[in-house]
Length: 234
Ligand SMILES: Nc1ncnc2c1ncn2[C@@H]1O[C@H](COP(=O)(O)OP(=O)(O)O)[C@@H](O)[C@H]1O
Ligand SMILES: [Mg+2]
Image (cartoon, rainbow, N blue to C red; front, side):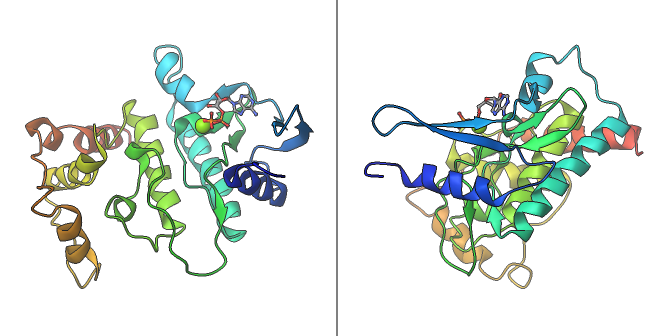
């Protein structure tokens, strides 16, 4: 169709490939006037963001529920990855949950199939859930970046606040490092991540200096998360 955005073509293509309990089902595609197209999905009553943020006081997950939700998110992700699909926008608002507690991954607007190693755009994935390699402009990232996002969502389910809460793209990587330094974790070594120093120096060059880490970052997020896990190791 003329003028039909490539992202919508990708979204439909990806959704048509999927048939899994933990991936939202595309029921129908309806053509509207002009070039407009409506995607009709199975109805899912809740999304995780609304549960975590808007019903904060009402919904407290116990450890079994946390595990059950995490397991389903991972099952959905594993299914996508087996089909060579990267979701690229895993976050609480794109994780739907029905009244039976069944999780459905949704919003495939940024998803795409990757059959071979090819450069991918780094201008996506909602910032707080963005993997460090994408923040450092690595174009050859892959399925692992979704797994990073799942980890961020899980931490948010436990701590009830975003794990890597940054205000700008530039700050994001520094926030991650700030949290890890709070855990006495060193910066990655070149033998563990060969491109690391080059990418880090390029992104945080002289024109764009390394951001100062606010003091509170070292005491917040991860520590808070680990404290909660320690209190309830199940
Ligand atoms: N199948 C569905 N059933 C019910 N609500 C949905 C469904 N899909 C999406 N939503 C709701 O609409 C919101 C936006 O949908 P989404 O597909 O993520 O589009 P967007 O690209 O606007 O983020 C979701 O966060 C969720 O609250
Ligand atoms: Mg969305």
